[in-house]
Length: 399
Image (cartoon, rainbow, N blue to C red; front, top):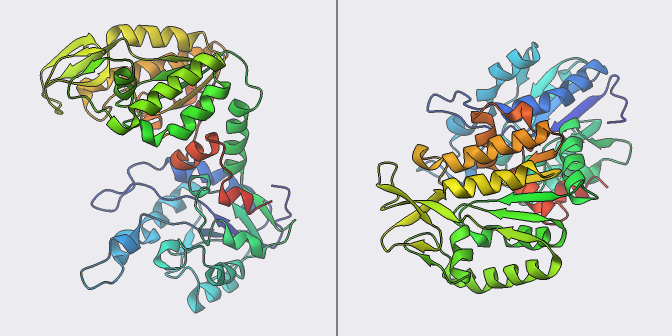
């Protein structure tokens, strides 16, 4: 951020799309804490801060009369918490753009903070409407994009608004810089061996990532529901496990491609299987290729945990995206937890580890291991697309 903030009004797009409970209390403020260094730097530099963010999808969850549920989706729920974190009063405006927003910005003095209303209350936000973006741009002298979590969206406040600020008047924030730097460390000239751990339910969600990884990873560990589509591709019996029948041929092609590029795809040799999708279901540990009828694999087994941990601990660069099982159910969370501990152990030995993806991040946070890995990404979908090799609109617009 090589900008002069002195006496400037700085429009900062952050990602404050945080989870709230029924009483609208924040249950996880990771994304808020991640944006604080950028906000503090602007304040320290003598600027006034104007914060923009979205929260949820208000236009897809309207009231019965067709109006926006402002009580549920207002960013004002965050004002008190943000004030405490910054140890400074945060003002709130009930508009994103408009007369009230303009007046609030005009009255803002250096060292003060204004939080604007949910950008997605404006219909043009998710459409990348340039007329809306132009109104947003008029609120600030400078623009900072620090919302990596929405960098893959071509929205008014993330991509279109940047067009209205000249070079030298816009910048990535500290969080955005860190996200890009750490992702590039995995993609460009990583220390080897490089191990990618890919989990989650479906192969179809990770096709592009897997194809990209096969070209540059040494080891690809596959867990979660998607592992059983690969098992079927190898002729295994998977019982009632989640299998994408229309992706079996694709799985065969990925396995074949890996054999030609030198990347090794590792599948779990055994699984924790259950007779139904339920935390109270009967459980057994069986070979992943021989799951009996009526049973399903819901986590990697004890031998798979040992195998995967050994590979991870011998790695120099580690990328982890997606859980090894049904992590939200305690009986099927052990595989994911074991992987988290192995990644932390490898990091302690000097490996570089990048964690990206909701459940992977949740596992690291729940085990209090976030400070024992190299970097925990705040952007699940954005990080996934970045690693797939896509150019993200929120990044491209700043060039």
